[in-house]
Image (cartoon, rainbow, N blue to C red; front, side, top):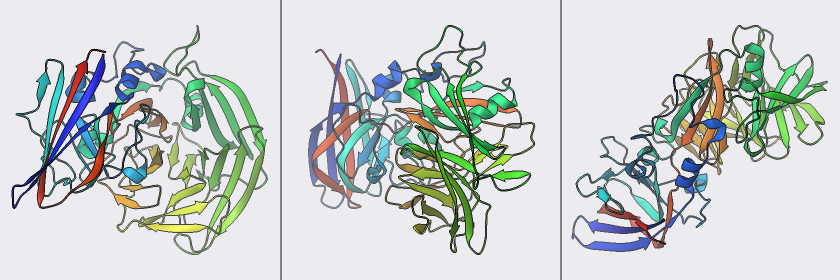
Length: 465
C-alpha cells in the first residue's frame, strides 16, 4: 500500500479577504514504519505479569490521528530522504498544530478544525487553522508528525513535556547496587551491536567496561529486563592527574565525545575566581589516555556531575554535555552556559540565556538527576535549549522524564536511559515525538504575517501500487 499526501495552503488577508492558495504534494518517510517495525530492547513486549508499557490505543493507534496527527512548519526546505525523520537545530519548526484545538497561549500553535477534519474511506483529511496571531514566519516546508509532536515541537515556553512519550519502564531494582551502577554509568550505547560502554573512576584509575546487553538480538539464556547483561571487557587505566574531586560527594562526569574518544571531567562549583577542571581523554580503539588540568580564567561553573562514595542507592547526577568538540557546563548563577573547547581550553565562551534558569533537572529531583542531554545537535535542558549555532531558547521547564541518571541515548525514534531514586531504579525508553512522517517542500516559501490567517488542508490517502 502506497501513501499519497496533498496539502493545500490558503492565506487570507484579514483586511481585503484576498486568498492566496498553494497546492503541494509530499513524500512519505520511514517514520511510521520504524515505529511499527523496530522493537529495541523488546520495548513493545512485556517481560513481567504487570505491563508497564504504553497503551497503543489513542496514543499511537489508529495511525491517524495519533501516530500521524500533527503538522510541523519549517523555515527552510527539508532533505527529501525517506530516512530523514528529524530536523537539525538550524531548522526548528516555526509553527505546528496537533489533533485538537489549541487552548494555550502558544502563538506558534494552530488548531485542528474538528468539523472538517475526518477519516476518509481510504485515508484521512486534516484541516488546521491559524489565526492572524498564530504561526507567523517564513514557511518553506511542511511535515506531518505525531499528535504529541504537533503540540509544542521540541519544546515551547508554554509546555515541553510532549516532546517525549514514555513507551516503557523496566524495574531493575533487584539487580543490586553494583550491577545497577554499571548501567547508571553508561557513557555510550552501540544499539546495532548490542553493546554499551560504562565508565567510572575508582582507585586512582579510569575503569571502562564493555557490556553486552540485548537490544536487537537475544541469546538463549538472556532476559529482556537487564538482569543478564554480560561484561565482555573490563579495562582499568591508571591515571596520574585525573581524579574525581571531592570527599563524601565526588564531582565528575564521563561523556561520549562522538569523535573516537570518551572524555572525563571533574570540577567543584565556584562562584568567583578561576575554575579548575581536571580532564581525561580515552581512546576507544586502544584505551590509551591523555590527561591534564585546566585553569579557566573568570569562569564561574557549576559542577559537571556528582557521584556518592557511600550510599545504599545508585547515584549519578549529570550536569553537562558535549557537542562537536565542546563541553557545555551551566554557569554558577544559572544565567547562562559555558562552552569550553576540549582541545583548546583558552577557547571558552559564556552563552547568556537572557533569563535566570530554574536550575532544575529534566526529571524529578532525587538520588539521580539529569540536567541536560543532547538530542541530534540540540542541547535540551529543563527550561532552555541551545541550538547548534549557540542560540539560547527559553522553554517552560516541565518535568518530563522518569528518574534519570544517564544522558538519553538515541536510535532513530527511540531514546534510552537508566536512572532511579531512593530504591526505585528503572530502564526507560521514550519516543521522540516531533518526527517527520512526511516531507513536503513548497515550490517557493510563503510568509505568514499578522495580517493573514492560514488554513492548511492536508489529505493523506492509501493508493494501490
